[in-house]
Length: 636
Image (cartoon, rainbow, N blue to C red; front, side, top):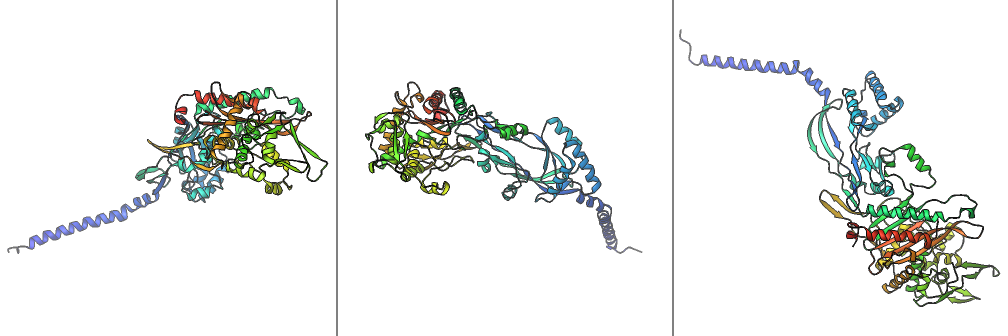
């Protein structure tokens, strides 16, 4: 019997369909039954996680490009709380090994683990040992290679240059404190971040840090990376380019230290009964009068810049903290003192502007003036000059630094109920002082700046509980009494007198550098001394006379150069048996006189301005004009 055509083809097709169906059913059975256990295990053993990539922190450079702060690669042993074993026996074994290898006590490990597991980010590493050498890092990686929740991580360390020359200004980085953590977490910082804690590091934290990157990583359940699925690279922080020239900083520090030692060599401690030895302490500032750039900012004694850093020596730090010389205080902008006679040029400028005096105004100093107590007519107070200087005009009053001349300008003078000279009065002096930047921070771009004090009657009533009297105005007029300023404030005031009245915000950072691109920071004028140019010119001329032969500031003028200068000697502290007081020594100056470039301020804790601070200023000015570019080139 013949086969029906087409039935054979149908059979073949049916057979093929059956075969394909059998293959599919077999594969389905394999996937669902045979391989399901393996996929379930993969789901348990692997996970996707986002890893933050920390950016490289920006460096800090001086104006010549010398590196003052940079990052040094190191390694650290860390615990990741979210990856630590949950099962008790495995956890016990891990903690025992960690205690042995890290040296961290078991109780501390358990406390850190408990805190980390309840933190906002339990996968943030908690560092147990920092600054591992390469050999230790390799050994610990091998020891903990199969241990969940323990890693050897890269932990860059901040390293500072310059020794003790710029430690206060550079600052340091430190781990987040409990109080800081919530605020920084809102800004996207991990809980184990190290942030600027002082100095430029703190002020410019947002600029130096840069922008973190991110990786999407497939890893084992214990945190071991298997593959990077995607990556957004981090953006490095910007470099800070400082106005400070470390060569001038070094020579300024040397001049200051040597000058302080010369002054203390002449200090007669027996006047105070051989108690409380004087400190080798002082400060110096060099400021560009046109831009406000800080060219040198010195405080002594100081400390090694790496003392507060990542690898700090706690014993050495404790010794510095306990040091009675207060090395952690930058005396150039953190500490206030009575400025003494270096305040007089501002009083003279105010007197000219207010019509209290003209350049030819003559006042005679016989060595002192006396005033009667307003409540007790039989009581007189004597206000002394440093010498009987005779009859002086305003130029001579500044050049010879006559206290009597400035008692008149400040408070006036009356005799037998008759007003012989009308002075400025406290309110006008205070107004000009504040306009010149005194009594408030200057705006320097580091934290911790002191504001100082410009006193007035309301302040005295509230703070002291007494009424303001004429004697207070007299002492204010010569820069003593309650008036308190920083050397940096006096540098800003001196620069304003030199540049025609601009009260500049002093700047340490002149540019931000990202790769080849450099963005300058702008000059900032915070105000004006409200004195006409012709009156400021009179004050500058009087300061020129003070720095020339016969003036009290002549030891501050370098040979062959014309400058404007003024000395100050502010009495303070104990009174000796001979009726004298200890004194701070000050000097302000600007140079060159014809086209001022820089203002210099010197302060030393014990000394006389004309004898001890002036020679220091001269050495600093000689260094400034002797140094080759980039300092002079950039400034001029």
